[in-house]
Image 1: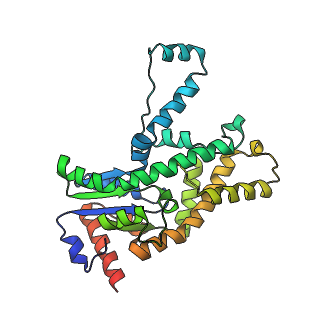
Image 2 (image 1 turned 45 degrees about the horizontal axis):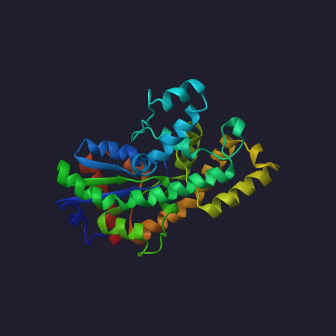
Image 3 (image 1 turned 180 degrees about the vertical axis):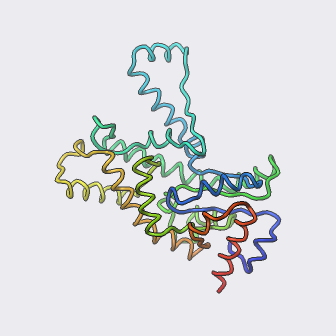
Length: 288
């Protein structure tokens, strides 16, 4: 959804925006802020963790509980139930399910199991992104929201072809929303890595990239067996490698089908009107 003039966006009776960029760059902060100004907040990660992967997550909880005889007996008799309390701001149930490959004694998953869950996430993320038009209509029909923001995960760029207008997800998002890249700086990237180490987010790797980086990490650290990989160390190292691999592809998606705003400018936005003005400036910049 490209605009001929900034005024077309400013004066539109209804607006729909998809924000994308690395996890932690400000997408969810913005979405939470806009909710206070009557924007419907569609969280792709929340949709993945509830509608499209909720059963996998809860079954994993149950499998762990069944290892405890006391809990196993109560589950079999339907005396207790287990559910996932995932929220927009707490994606830990999804992160825990996806896990990190490596030493099982440190909470790691066998690489093959990790890859199986990664594929589940890929399918779920595509499905959640294709849900966007339905939720744009639903937000208006059920709740009366004219404005809509889709808050995507950092792995959006991994499940699309950013150069192909015919890619099903690109086609759906570009036809129904304005695509907006929130671009950070090198300093932002360093801060994102630091924050990831403290609070890991759900991570998705393209299959070939995961295999490549897994082998590279083992070679760099002189590790022969998969079970000797420290999952926390690989998770942080892999996140940083993934961050730098994704950045040019984010920019290409914006150049091809959308607009770019700086994370530092977005951090100054205080309400919906200021956000609309920021997007309008990005439209004008692209026109020039």
